[in-house]
Length: 428
Image 1: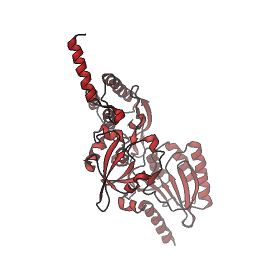
Image 2: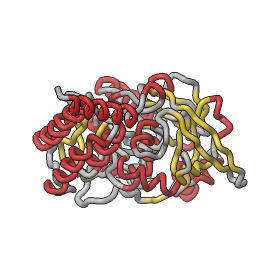
Image 3: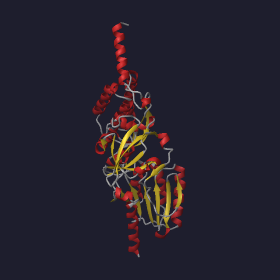
Image 4: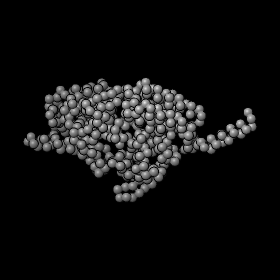
């Protein structure tokens, strides 16, 4: 090798070493040539697998535009670190346009800053945090590392995963804005695992806090302080299993089923039998099924419950069955809410759902061979109503807001209980 070539290589290595950063010291290396090659292979695999497996990959983005985006990413890979590649893959995946097609940032190790938010209008409020930062509960986020809230939302929104419509974007954005790797990949934060968060309270008093991110597997084991839990004052649970339970107010002949999760077919069958027995025993007339915390599962399990409920003669089948929905209601939760409207004649109350009742669902996954990130894709098209809408639209729309939340007031459930009370008074 000539001295000129050796000198050139030395200069190149020196430039790369000064340009690259040490991730172990809270800094991140740009991709080296081998990593670039591996990523090109992964991107090609990503494209080929989606074309082969997704039910209709180009339902929202044209093939030409999608391929142009992938080519642009491959061209710029040498200037990126792995987190910049990650958020670009998230952005490109979002272009596919259905909430079940996801680039799983959580599948390859990630960390969060220990403050959890909920979006009220354009305000991100702290609703959960660790004991150390409990004084931040209820406060508004105003900036991260100097980027103000409106700009934060603008930058982060295009990479949020799991989005079917504006409602699911509003639900999932708060769960993305505290992910350290996402913020760093988007160049919102200057360092990977540390950032300056700025807050204000309702009196306009500002507070700045420097936070360190915590690996997700450690954070989930920490004791958390929660601002409020949704209140339900309808008696003690009569029947429960894995994320779904029944309670009742015998005096008002009203039962409440909180349907957050799908416990498995056999457990659902046993639960549904227990619900049927309790409602028949207590001659329940009014039934509320709460899907607001239901993010999805196997909607056929929900039909098992409906099958049991439809046999009960004590229920008011014309005006006495209600289903609560919201932005968190997604996938099978939306399907079941739409089906319960049809099968049980349920009146739908609350906010439009994060999932669409007419859309691409029923997901499967594959793994990128080199980077080991998981990609999820849609396999089916479900039509739970005749027309396409942005979410399942409630019959009675009642928006959640910060004023009610900070008072721990559930005005959606309140409306239903008041509606039931008015029916009873009218009858008397």
